[in-house]
Length: 556
Image (cartoon, rainbow, N blue to C red):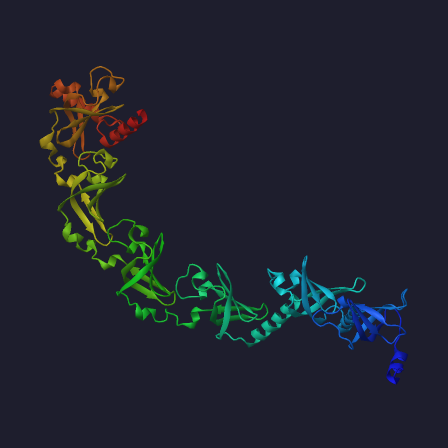
């Protein structure tokens, strides 16, 4: 007989397909569970619809959904699983539509994501699992999280979830909280999250801050990885905060005193210091004196004697060196050093060692159009100007008289210590022959010599005393001559008579045809020479030599 409670319960329960009712487990037969729902007949539920870890027991009260009120055998067909699904679906709808938060357990991995049990099965795309999608989704199976409902399809009864949006919202809230509590100068804890060429990103418990490479150390750093490693915990100083862009600038070197604060007193001008070469550039070498403090040895301060020295030829990276402090500037954070000032400047004794008027010897190191550089000792050259090579010859280029590598003897003319220059001359070793030209060559003298050069207007004859005379083409023969080369050859011995001597312009005119002339004929030839136009001057040696050189170059 039914109790009054059961009669009242039965009277309020609606028995129809699709309804959820409560029933009591009567028996368990194999894979079927017999359930009494208070209807005229019992119903069966498959045992597979229950949780294996918590199977039903006789006497348990459970909820079931009536699938068929009465089948062909007169039995009620029930489903515990469908009842839970309907209850959970209604619960999900009651929580709220898209945007609600619900807990769930990850049950399996499928293509494109995970299946989550939130009372019903829902889909979690792999892109929505975390801020950074995990590499191994299988490691998450069985774990319980809160999820945000991002999409519900009522017709298909499927749900799309996101855990990432909850994490991002939480991180955003945490960032705002952190930003609101930070003040420049604060020292906070963080963990190195990522390293780039320009610095490292530090995780400040949900807020990322940038530790720039220039703020890692007062010293030189090649790459941030030299200072920090991913995962390393750090205490960093807050340098700047941008709340709008949620950016925080951090510093590591600011935890210690700036070594440049006392630099001017610590590195006094003239002090000798020791350091390590850390970088070589075209203009000098950087030397680390202490962590965060570097000095520059400019190329001009490397050596007293080496010309245009290359830093790499004198110093090597990592080399320990001594140097003299030339200057220290705290504001510009610069220290100027000198390597050469460790030694005595050889130019300090140059005036005594190379006194004006003394004779010196050296090797012709370099020839230019204006003179010869003669190495007197390492780092000290003397320069012979072209005008100081010969008393008698018009030298257009030093190579006419001197070859590179040749030993040269000369006289010191001037010493300029300030500009580090020594002027020397070759011709000053002997007397100027033009000072005694009257004793050497007089009008009418017969002279002998060799043809040294030919020109269209005549021939140069090398005479004694390192002097030249010029035989104009009109003075070679009584007959008219078209081309001088048809009558004279370089190196040919000739005898000629002096018909012109000009001390002022240092000119000697010669005549081969006048070798046998008497005095009257000689005076006539001299008058004829004097009557020539300036451009036709037979003994204008400076013009003659120039033309001879041009003609020689054109014929080569």
